[in-house]
Image 1 (spheres, rainbow, N blue to C red):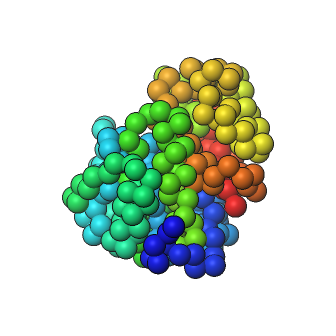
Image 2 (image 1 turned 60 degrees about the horizontal axis):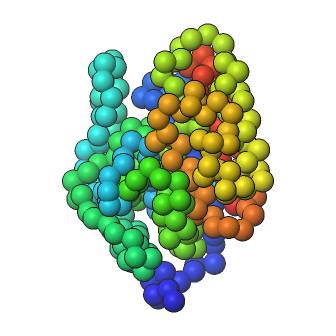
Image 3 (image 1 turned 60 degrees about the vertical axis):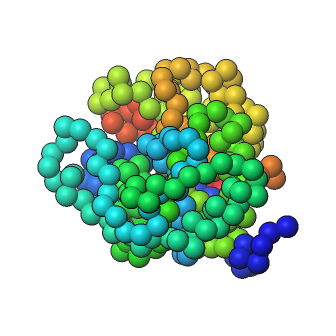
Length: 265
């Protein structure tokens, strides 16, 4: 039974997964506009729970609950990208709800009070909520195990009824060996199409078993931490068939990186 603090407000938020680009996305006017339009089309969130590909730490760890400096977890970029600021309010109330849900599902957790938002978190937020006026809490993914990530999402599902936007941030294809090579390789198109079909059918088993079932999975994701936030987002939906849409599609970095982003309603 949920505590009083977690009772529904009557407004259920969508759950999303966004391709987060890289710091250079901040100079991509088209993609920035697409992200901004997407945010405007959704209900305004009371707070955001961010799950980024760039934080895997066991147990599930809650980041800062007050405004702290960003983490510039990238190297060799022009200096201007290290000057980006995004001073979103902390979300201590959301953190309390997350702890309660994890505890109620026998999932271990920890706190890292000085851990700021990494680029997988703040880059899309700069585009979508540029006023930095929505409280944000980032949590880690505890392990790269599909069933465990889906279960984490299931535990967090009640947050949707509290006006919380659960936000997975990663990439559905991520092979840096093909960055900026001209043309979209067939493996990228094949994997992107397979994921889109599995999402539309909300085939949870296939989504979790993507390394075996999806075409060219090893090429699309030599390591798969960028896919992992999708499984948390899908788990947050539960097992009922959602309305699934793709607010942003297409390919980036000359074609090997799919921009496909997902909204579950």
